[in-house]
Length: 453
Ligand SMILES: Cc1cc2nc3c(=O)[nH]c(=O)nc-3n(C[C@H](O)[C@H](O)[C@H](O)COP(=O)(O)OP(=O)(O)OC[C@H]3O[C@@H](n4cnc5c(N)ncnc54)[C@H](O)[C@@H]3O)c2cc1C
Image 1 (cartoon, helix red, strand yellow):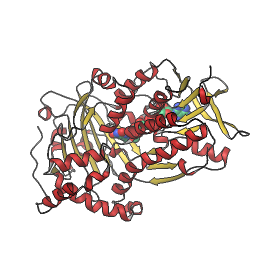
Image 2 (cartoon, rainbow, N blue to C red; image 1 turned 180 degrees about the vertical axis):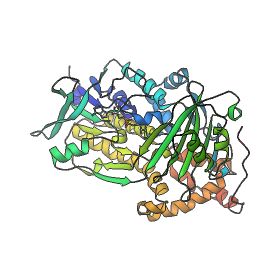
Image 3 (cartoon, rainbow, N blue to C red; image 1 turned 90 degrees about the horizontal axis):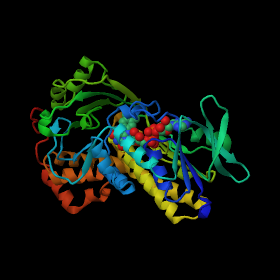
Image 4 (cartoon, rainbow, N blue to C red; image 1 turned 60 degrees about the horizontal axis):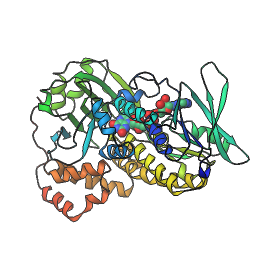
């Protein structure tokens, strides 16, 4: 039986975080949703080939967690049952900016301490439990299937192992194949136009490893992190508690810098950070895995909202916009885009309206995190061209905020709430907030750090 408005069958290509979230909301209005995935999904999501980044530390921002809880009401219990821990963003971890430890404060922003593999596994289990969602794994997407006469995508071409290319028909196709999406090239070849791209060549390299976590480590805190004070620093560290009594320790270098994947090289990189606690703690840990290295060349934003597209085609997640991972935004933005899709499904009746509303509102969702990345990374001299006058002013203002965050819990919590997309940026410009910044301006610029134990 066909649903009203031709919503019979939707295909989502890519069964990673964005694809699972898209399938979840499509299942509300489509009779049937098929997830098409190249990998064999039998095994551990932390080791499958299609998501090499899943082996690197992932932080889920507080807004991302709350959207996931709206989409899957019991998912927090699932995460915890699988071994995830939760804590307060600014009270459960030891954070430093440059060489200064940030103050601690109960912000009310809940953070999930878990591997990306655990998050994907739980979302997958919930999504595939929906009665009208089917998974076709071990199936490769080759391209969209275009009906030239109707100017619409009517399915996808797929390839199964040792079989001829086949067509899977659909009323709607959602590309969730990640940053390597081939939709722009396909559009150029078959449609004569591809989306405009904005690219920031940040060249980040992550090196990470798992270590054994003991109850006495860090006095029970769940994380230790050093954020770079741009434009001087290109190195960051994040060590977070994850399931299985482990620490996931990641060191990242920008603009070609990287931590070598050797015991000595990793420790030396940690020692080079301005925040000595990181190396002191690392030196006490026992490794329980090999090193993993991941190179991320550039943040890429694709402006589908600015072009005319064949009807019946949407793009979500990293395929739409991929952000410098050190800002920790990708999964949260994918969740917000799924919400935008849900809203578009609810408020439109035709495929044309659905596409227009989705891309317009997804571009709005992407704009804020993208401005954080372009403003932040644009403060490196090599990437100055990405700074606008507004972001240059914002960087100066940000320096005032950074300074106050070392002493003032309210400033710290408000700043992180904006970074976590839980509060709008206007929260940083309220008179009471500005007064707090001014009060701290006269304080000395460096605070001492106590050793990590
Ligand atoms: C090093 C690193 C660290 C990160 N850290 C964070 C973090 O701390 N917090 C955060 O929120 N985000 C982080 N991210 C980003 C986050 O991983 C992504 O935003 C998130 O996984 C959503 O991605 P996605 O589902 O759009 O695409 P992906 O995760 O890339 O998934 C794409 C899927 O499509 C499948 N696929 C691809 N091509 C085909 C094809 N032809 N046929 C069939 N299937 C196909 C792949 O197998 C895969 O399953 C990080 C990224 C990197 C690289």
